[in-house]
Length: 24
Image 1 (cartoon, rainbow, N blue to C red):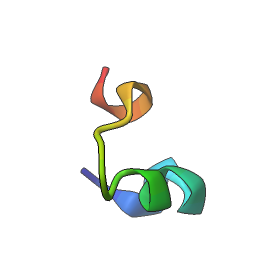
Image 2: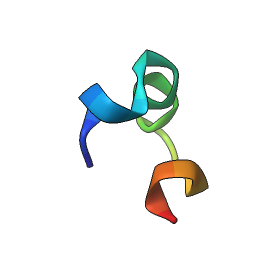
Image 3: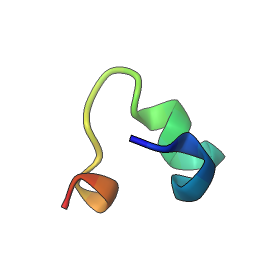
Image 4: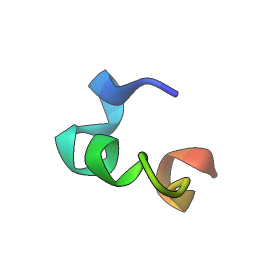
């Protein structure tokens, strides 16, 4: 999981749950 490539938005949402955006 690389916060730098997904962006600050996904990085903040990646705390509680896994985003299907970068997970898939």
